[in-house]
Length: 298
Image (cartoon, rainbow, N blue to C red; front, top):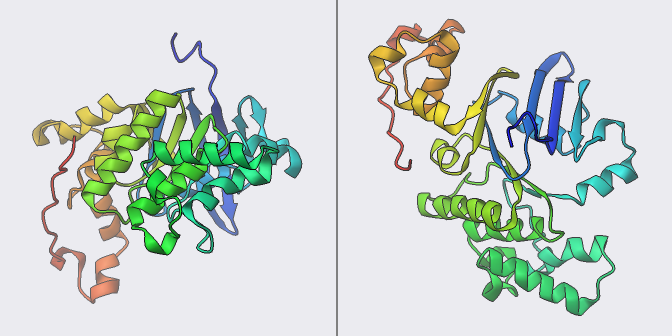
């Protein structure tokens, strides 16, 4: 079945979000389909985290609409919005665990708050969720006793507590070493394949993005530059330099971001803002840029 024939599980239409005089999102459109992993990427200040918070109902858009499961959440009261929130889970960047609770108690919390299950059933559900993320044997530990990667996995187990149809990830690889980051990526893939969960991942980690994504969305200055299959971005990233010079400006901008190149439209934009002169007291052409590091994972 083609995307045109499927109904999106998430639909963002013309999203505009302002904070005071600053417009952070400028008419963003985005459809996410059941079972896929959508990666939203962009530089700092591009609006990707604001878009995520708008999609989960933490921010209300100034214009446009957000549909989850066919419901426009912008029109719901708080009680109805909370009912929708029970259908999705969120992995926050820090894990957001309660330090006074054990890992098992953190995972059990949504079940105790939002269901009427008996304690025995809750304990079984907690063990199942912790087993999914490889933490069943660490159930009685407190957050202070585990590593950053384990906190991310514990946060993911809690996000899975109510068997959500959608999982939102806010920078899941941030602050992790490469091996732990790769393990989190494989966990995201496994959950998608085994449970059929729809995943929306906000990240600027390109190794992770190209590992997990089905489709990728690139934001820049609050606008959607491109939304396409991962293969399209791979072609852009791997294109020979002489061919890349013939691309339009926005494609070259995306390519620079994907590759982490020091030279390109993003760097030129910063030069035009006289950033180097303001920061170092010198003209931009005197600021030396070092070569980028090539991605280690494909």
